[in-house]
Amino acid sequence: MRSSGREREDPDLGVLSGRTLFSLQRELFTRLAEQGHPALRPRHGAVLAYLDENGSRATDLATRSGRHKQVIGTLIDELVELGYVRRQPDPADRRAKLIVPTEKGRDQMAKSDAILADLEAGHAQVVGEQAYAEFKRVFRLVAEHQVARGDNTR
Amino acid sequence: MRSSGREREDPDLGVLSGRTLFSLQRELFTRLAEQGHPALRPRHGAVLAYLDENGSRATDLATRSGRHKQVIGTLIDELVELGYVRRQPDPADRRAKLIVPTEKGRDQMAKSDAILADLEAGHAQVVGEQAYAEFKRVFRLVAEHQVARGDNTR
Image 1 (cartoon, rainbow over the protein chains, first blue to last red):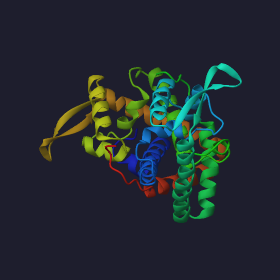
Image 2: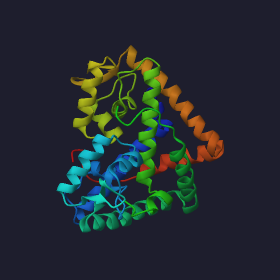
Image 3: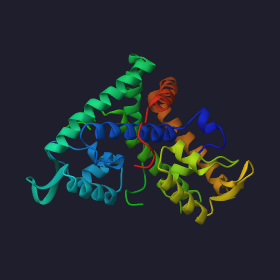
Image 4: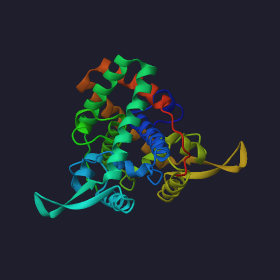
């Protein structure tokens, strides 16, 4: 949390990640609304980004998104209500539930893939293909390496 | 929103930004709690990251963080209550208010600067100093270039 001015000249990793995430989410969900998915909101990205056609456990979605379990649970409830996912028994453990995308959910996944590819192609054009590929390579290492002590419930 | 598996092999810009932001925030706020600021929560980062010693307008904080004005307003209220900022009349326009860090707020800013520098130094060690500097350079361009149609109120 830089003092005056420095945040704008040399923004830290958190500021850059936050600014990029929220701008990208807003553009993605604006385009999704134009393509038949107007009921979705940027907050739903925390679940939608991690959906698996074969289904996922809610706890797994929480871990992979880095969000609190309670937040993920609320978002899943909303997405069930909106018709994007349903809860199914897990064949591997019938006491557990899997979150599985519906046909509408799969349509949204395919459209999001295409929108994100287009947004990223735009960035690659601005900075250069090679520079953008290298940026993604380092970003994957940074994202994996970022420690996060503190549980998912604060 | 990649289908099964792809999100893990070739995560998109949103997944990488989200994962990095939430992990980094959790680690930052865990360390801040250890250094005398236990009442702060990761959500406060949306305001704390953009504080200016000379004060800022709430609308400016909303724009720069990319978050809804209502969210920022709520977070400011919480931070006033916790003693990190106060609202002061804006000398340039006495009908407007500036959000100004208190002494406790400035202590948190200095400690956050140091913690973030340490976290980023850790990443630079993992990927190499030059690679990390280049990563930050491209990330600044990407963050600036990311269009975000759609207002701040959805």
